[in-house]
Image (cartoon, rainbow, N blue to C red):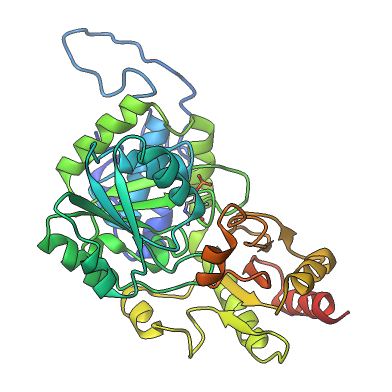
Length: 390
Ligand SMILES: *Cc1c(COP(=O)(O)O)cnc(C)c1O
């Protein structure tokens, strides 16, 4: 099944080397410097007696396979899957559950995951309990006889709360629960949850992995062969696979993951520091700040702090004024791109959440989320300063 051309070129070395030499980096047939676009829906079967490696693109396609093998190498899992979006990857993972099952979920989980669980999975008879996963007592208290899985997201969105991955994974093992983790914010460059005992890692590859705000995609990586077989059946059965062109574009974007993350993260650190020195900014959330809650847990399980900084300007009025005045960032939903993206959770990602619930989770009317891109950090800060004060 593997698409790796030959043993000599098997992925090896440190992360940055694997990002470039991931196995299918050189085309086996021609030596071409990029994975070929196998823009085909079906494959000729020359010998009906032999079961072909590829027969139909929903079930398998060499370009998509190269991407799936690529993310498997990066996450250190056994098998990867590419989906039409992050939500397609997440919903497919939830299809491992059955009617009557119960799942424990991080309370400040991505809005789309919350919506999936509370408006769709509930109708299929899968129940969920949302808990503050920074508090193990709450996780333990949520356990029921029909609990089958735990879903984690760390750092969470938008207040970047830190869950102890190994601690939750150990609890799950003890009770025979499947663990799934949304690793979108950290990417495998910074955080490799499978090494910490997680069963399934999920990504909105639309964000940092793709990195250019031009592809919608999702990825999943599993930790063992039996989960791999079950996920394959689900992916083929649901048919929510990533298209060929988008698979190619995603591979192209992923090659520069480290270079992009390094620049963005350095700038995010500077921005967070600058914001925390401004008297009119009420709170700054960034795991790299010395006073960020549970920073030491984050440092135990991750190699960096990422490029997302959230901060509270004090009121909805001030936030809206600032959003109308910024000149550098895209004012939009999404994150993790070459260009900076400024989001306003109260009116964008969390608009559907009842106001009391939103406030209880620290998502105030003055909270904005800055995903730092590759622009010059001096310009980013100057721009924010004029937008806040000008
Ligand atoms: C964007 C996002 C998703 C959903 O991904 P799509 O590609 O938009 O479907 C899931 N989780 C997190 C953390 C995200 O930021």
